[in-house]
Length: 323
Image 1 (cartoon, rainbow, N blue to C red):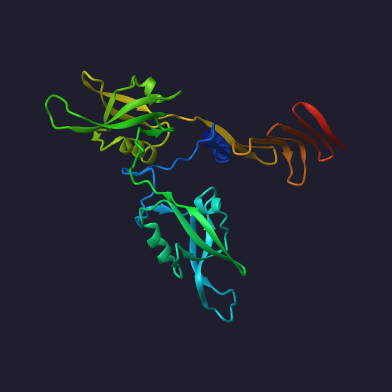
Image 2 (image 1 turned 180 degrees about the vertical axis):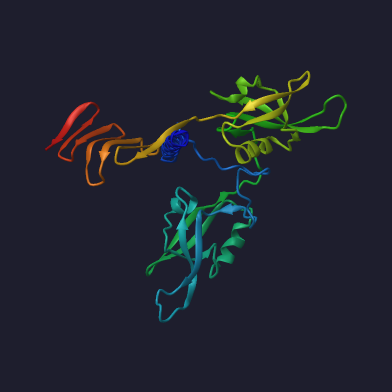
């Protein structure tokens, strides 16, 4: 009798564990709010792309060799063909269009794109005379070349981390107690809901390292917290506040979690999505129809009973009833 009781208890335990396992396996989670993706900058960045051809003048167009349109008899024709025109650029202002053929610039024959690039390397940014062929008509057009600035007037202000720490930083070299200079990430601005506030980190504090590893720059801090750690994970920051070096425990910003799917067919089915702001719920779902189902997409709400009665509303107003 004792063995029979134990056997029954064992079966009950197994049944309960099976139910618990089934419930956990059919429930999935997603962040409570959408998390934007960011592209991490490199250590060395430039506001403008490097001008590898050392051009001094911009005509605002891209060109290619002028070949005949015949597939059976491909022939190189005089001039270079305009492949694209920059909106509001010098060429567009002069009326040059895609497909035009540049025959010469200031009486210099332009049968290859290299000739045009050589002209653009000159420092003269005045007026250029373009001889343009459009279909069977040749025009003379005056174009004002635009100077390409190489002064590098853009000044980097700071690096920003809008997700993990919700703050901005600037690389700063710091000398502490006559030691060698070390690179730090100086806190420039703290955004709303930043975890730095809870950790007691303030503007102008310097971050020296993460989990005992010293930083190389402000970008190194941003790259590490977004690449090497999960949101909501805790880490140790080494901080210099102007008086002393301390260690602060920081919990990265946590978007929270919400249930995105519950599947217990045919009893019930629930799913939600943040991307489309959508939710759906059904009771006694037998694939072909459900006893009751509810769905919401944006502000539109729909109720369906046995697949026969459907009520759809938007902004609280009844807009459709089907029977």
